[in-house]
Image 1: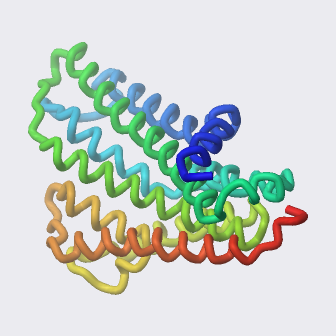
Image 2: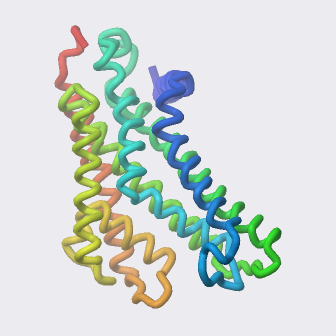
Image 3: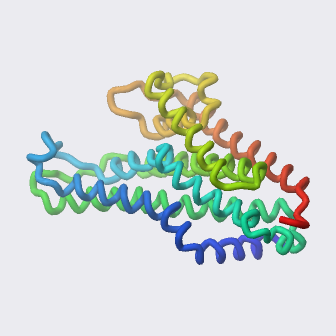
Length: 270
């Protein structure tokens, strides 16, 4: 079996797993966009001073940072664990293993996760931008002005997708090595939360360094490079490139180790 039939089969299974689709890829966009709408349409008195100018593209680009949020990582890790751990739970590897090479089965599952995570993040980004645009139309105190470059939005979105791909790859590696789902999800969440906590005490400087080996630091530096924060020094091109290479390295090494483990597992009883 080539990659495309394996990918279609995996997407077919995922499309019918409604619980995973909602909780892993639908819940976070629904909550994020709902809160954005609530705060955008609340009376100005309840929000304090409100800026006279709103930029939907800037809001959309900033909302892409949800791809680096530990709580969002928890739900995304649940999706990755369901995709990669379902065969262990139901002992179906022995049925589908002879139909395709193991690296193609892994790639099909990995691509299905990345596709679902990309759609989920796109809903967050598009929904936030549309909500802010609508709030500027219905509230005369706000002035609509688009000053953010679409390239900056695309870059911030791409970095967040890459960070979610790292999350899925690490979760897949742990699920395959442990042949379980719950433990790896908690481990990935704690790893992400620990990095976020460390970053709150020691923000990454705008230069390259060993902290960029951590995916959360690398993701935030790459997003700041794509969309410089106001009032703060923007990371240099070297730091942004190293951060992106770091995220890509996590994906490559994690996927390689996962496939290596899969090839050495006995699926006669899995």
